[in-house]
Length: 109
Image (tube, rainbow, N blue to C red; front, side, top):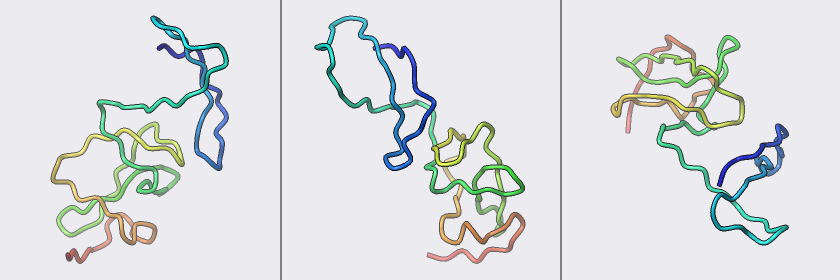
């Protein structure tokens, strides 16, 4: 399949876009509908972990018991974002909406 176009309108209830695809080998029956599951080789962070700080979207990570904000270039609100992190990076999930860059952290299990 190849993408012909993706409508730039997001359905806010389902968080889906409508796309038109062309088949490059076998063809589907005219008017067929279906779902495409997108898989990418680049890791992405779920949109629920992305926060807004100083008009920039990014994530908060724990580094040396301190909160660090990492801006994510080209992040879009409500969408997962591609990000490259070390495997050992600790992403702040609990309390992320009130934590600020530079805050001291108490990390527990």
